[in-house]
Image (cartoon, rainbow, N blue to C red; front, side):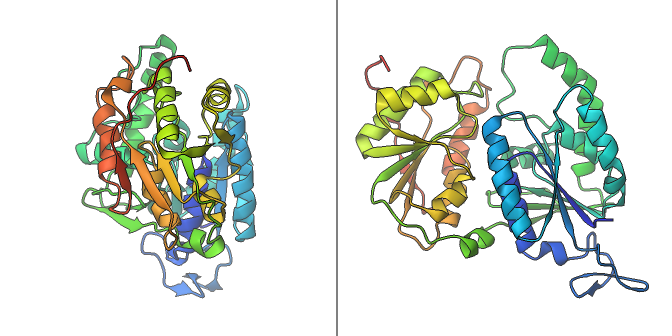
Length: 378
């Protein structure tokens, strides 16, 4: 049986699993197990060839852009010698039962489980099955910061932008039914001495006692790709804050137009969740070349070509791009979200959370003031 199982639902999660494996963590015995034998735990009768192996299970989402990027990342993972298992976990009414049923055996046998999204209901359900002695959470972007904060405060696991949205009876009913599973997953991820809980992250976090934090500095990425060719221009990185209901769509387009005009941006790297109609307006009305990356932006930027300046709103990339582009002359700049851009249904914590993403970025990230809103009509 496979010693280590990893569950991913996004391209960035899979990228960070590859970084985690490259860091040498895969060769370490899970939970302080038996001594190593050529990089794997020694068994009574010699070396177990399955020990130390990594099986990455992709819990495939519906979104076409995310699926495409995941397939490209899966190719990179196979090139690194890892095994991949693609699960159509959302492929119909019977898919969840089938997926959980087929994974139950490997989950109980695995000594280490790596997850990319502790807020995922799928992952939370799978955690209730595992007997692993070590649980590793790898980055899923800025959500990692909120996960750690909720773990420290002993709160139930909920995505930061969910609080404050209009009540949906269907969603509310699902939340109530799933509440015991979510609570169980939170207890499993809370250090209690029975499991080794680790966090592999590039985000600035202060984990609670009992959680080991390992730094992700994108060593594998920098060793595999680049350095990039620079265009000499300015690129703008998109965000899905409109799609998640945090930022007003018209305000966001105003800000994009103002940033592009002020800094001479020519390309817009779309987030994989951004709507097609919104991107069409950015291209046709603002005049930016919209790029829909086939891989996570960290890889795209490292491979190049990339602008000498990269502009972003508060998001994961203001923490990850400086690491991915270390040693290059690229400047990463972040523009704060003006509180007036937030929707009426945005979480009460949204402003503080987004501001924290900006202020916690490294010194190498340039801070930009709020941009003035141009005339409406975009």
